[in-house]
Length: 447
Ligand code: ADP
Ligand code: MG
Image (cartoon, rainbow, N blue to C red; front, side, top):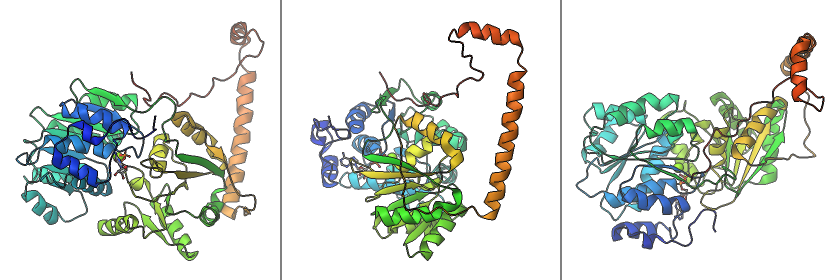
């Protein structure tokens, strides 16, 4: 069985209206992916769906195609897709537009940072499908430009992000304002049990659809490695990775906007064509960088987690986690920018000495081994003065902590030790519980 595509099925066999099939064929789609083959027929039947499938497996078309099939020209403001970033609003609207180009249905993106008047003009033409970020959608609704009363289908892409704390209230307000019966379709590559529960509050008798097997959360086409490095050596190592790996197009993820800009400047000084992308940049600049990226005119894009989700750009051969993400789910989305739609990709993560536990957490979540790698001829530099002082202070604090722990252990009353000892006939009595695993936070298989 093909990992991504359902090669036993064709789009022609899905009973779609001919003008839609024409657009799909012209887009170069022949076989649906597994998530498309499962989701599209159920969605066309009108079911509410919570769908999970790995990054790059075609979730956009999975919810876009049934909507294009179900809506007719008179269904103005008939469907709403909510997404977490402006870049994603533009991309998702574009893909639905391409697939639906012969249906006569119009798709419009609405997102912050672009002039209200430009988008207002487009809404005045009463499109059938709206793709937007929550803030701007609510704004347009309050201005009376984007009514909810005709909505037949509401969709959340990246549902776990949309229902996490930052967006939760906005989503509640928007979805709570749809008073008529409607269909809901929510998708993501990562859906924790908590998110599943929240999502189901918006759904009736939902189809729980997953194409993610228990094996792993990331596609096998992405080769994952980590490289140990000291914080002050990361820039030099990145330069070496670029020289050695010869990436077609590389995406570098940093924790902060300041680091994004610093790394971009450094690469520029080394004559590497690098661009920044983060939320402190004006929107027109963000749009320009995305355009350049899509035209293949950027060699290295250094980005914040703004670019971690959903972005689908051809030719991203490498993803570098310059900083390890704190949240293992973010890792899944970041590396999912490569190895899309069955292509190969490389994921490299820089890991500093104290970050072992974060990497363990990532491996526990994804259920994939990340192999250690590095360059024998990479020359680490001595720590700069400020790092050296910090390291010494940390080492001292650690030594004190170990000493105080050992005093506590020695002071344990004999009784409890004896009681425990009876449960451990081997004679070795643990003094601390094993670290709580991070596995099981995500749903990985459905019955
Ligand atoms: P996801 O949302 O699951 O991460 P996307 O919807 O962004 O994935 O799709 C990834 C890429 O695969 C896009 O470039 C899309 O055009 C392409 N794609 C989707 N479905 C198919 C298909 N059935 N055949 C070929 N390419 C496809
Ligand atoms: Mg997507």
